[in-house]
Image (tube, rainbow, N blue to C red; front, side):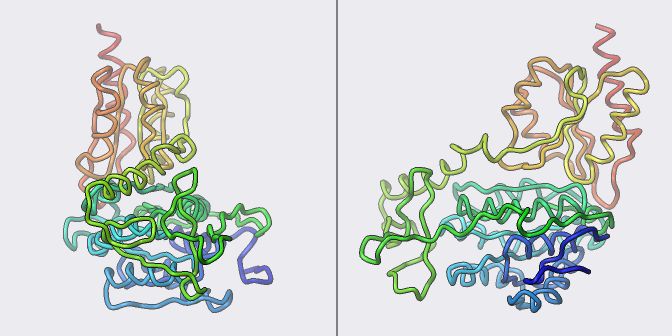
Length: 390
């Protein structure tokens, strides 16, 4: 492995998705991770524990996943970029911290390598059944950002992006992998550090007597300080004013939650990202993400070979949802097909956005295996044939 002077790998490597995710975190400047071993995500932090001494950082194995996630708060407020990694049951345990991170605007990254559930489920086999939990898993109103890679290369690239989003908007950001992507090995090209765009922490330049920890800028995002630098800071999960002091009034709650929501909602167009293939003339559009998008692309190609105009829309940023683009497609698309390794999650968002203007068909999977492209192809042809028969 080649490394630059600060220990970040460069060049061409053959890595699995978990390993590439670790390298993305290091390249993004992450120097702290806390975690608890859980399949199929353990390889991310195993590699981090091995690599982080080379770049000057810390890995801590905590007693469980809730503790692992809460450790991020201390690291971040001390000035570090930090992440944790988990799957299935551990993700559920982290939901209390997700709400805390949203409320305290603690920038951090949570990687979930999804496996079959519920409960202990299928520790070593794939699923995509945590997608709604990523968005709605903690109580209350808040916004997050979630990305879904479909290759080891994207595990590297999108982990870098996840840290950048976290710093730019001061929110918890999720990398929603699945077991297949986490464990597949492919070529990963790691650019030199000078070629990787890194968003730095928003440290304030205000004097101590002028700084308020939760006074937002014009984009709705406050500046930060390092604990111990002499600034007076109070960080609490309670509803708080600009000083960070608890305030139990409806008006303070409204002002705070409005800002937590709007700092993402008002920048949705800048955050949302998707990939399209052959949608320009498509009668049937398949919407898929993660490993399922790779299978769906094969089904789209098979449909095209049979003279059926099919296309693929792959959400890369799943939350915020790419509803603007799907709404545009709904105005001219005859049908949507949504394969997911779950019994219906992102398909609900597609149905909401399409709003009855075209049929939306879920192709579900219980977990444990990926779809067969023939099953997706059958749904594509069925909708195309039904339209011709009208």
